[in-house]
Image (cartoon, rainbow, N blue to C red; front, side, top):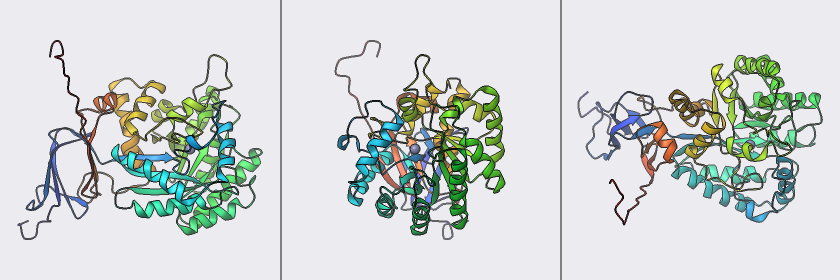
Length: 423
Ligand SMILES: [Zn+2]
């Protein structure tokens, strides 16, 4: 290819160590997509020297609730610390929901997430009789306004149930028609197994009508009798939706006896369900009624991985009535899940790092995630050489690049004003 026909690179990244590859190489982005670095015309391109630092095609946040973030200061304290009390507090707060307020809070957290290297995000937003489509209106506005800097998927989430909250099925249908991307669900929040199955059936029907994926909150409970994951697996297989269904939380899976757990784990693998762990919130919310030993609410991460199931993780809630901390930093969550899931060996740490990167991309169905020619021109340069180093230090995301443009640049500097012994 000669210079006249070579694609004109807008951005060249030199000496980039792409996670999972053997050594550093150069990358080129033209018109928002990767092109072969050796073929690109670099005249006029911005040049970034990655200097052998670790690079990823962006962190994926697959499970957050942007309509609820930052509500902590405007609601009563969750005294029990439990999921149930959080939902009760939220119910009262929803009466005061306003589109502008939700959009402003969501925007602040999106900015924080981008600084942390998040290039794609999937947010659940409540759709129910209490708040109607107000959160949807807010997030449709946010998705449009932030479209240049982040890709946002919206899940219509019936937190109060579908069967148990009359009118919600119609609201879900409206939400999908107006631009929500994914049909959500919370089938355990129904009166019993028959209603849970009906909840899933209705959600699948709406998803089919819109050719949409399904992403449900499943068995977010310590109760070993919370068994809607099994129903979800069966429905996924029956509808031929392998690979298009995601289950978040699945805390009860950790509370099942081993025989039943093995059966359900096999079903999850057969159904090709993507699994999302939520280590921050479920460590905080679950086990509140237990005496010692306390259950810790984390799903069976290693057993799922051992069966070849795609596992990712998300922030879930952030500085609200569910969870008082968080800045939507995938490295912070990686450190948490490595502890909670006992993932300490070198290959296990690499498996943790896959969760908010390649695994998350599979959850969101991203076909152009990566740095191969033709892929979306997203890249995050981390101030680290290895995944373990990145997680250990929750290191700076030196550059966050979206479709070939630098969105954020961070360099934290510490000056030791007294000499460090040995230095
Ligand atoms: Zn959630």
